[in-house]
Length: 103
Image (cartoon, rainbow, N blue to C red; front, side, top):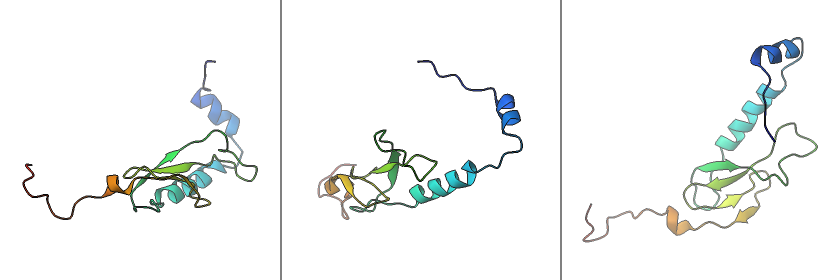
């Protein structure tokens, strides 16, 4: 299936006179996801989509789960449920250099 987008000018014309409800909601969603950290190691996270449950009946935007960039933990930030346990050992950086280690 080929995806074809509407021309931007035609889209603007079609949307004239309608209230923009998506922009504010999208900014709120982005702020929510950006404020989340990994519950296991405190690392930064990346949004991931699961097409099985991205859309719910009460929200106009898709719902994402998060994957920690440091340890790999995957979790649902809305419920706090862990989808896949991460490896904290991957996230740890030694406080002191290992003896004899060449940089």
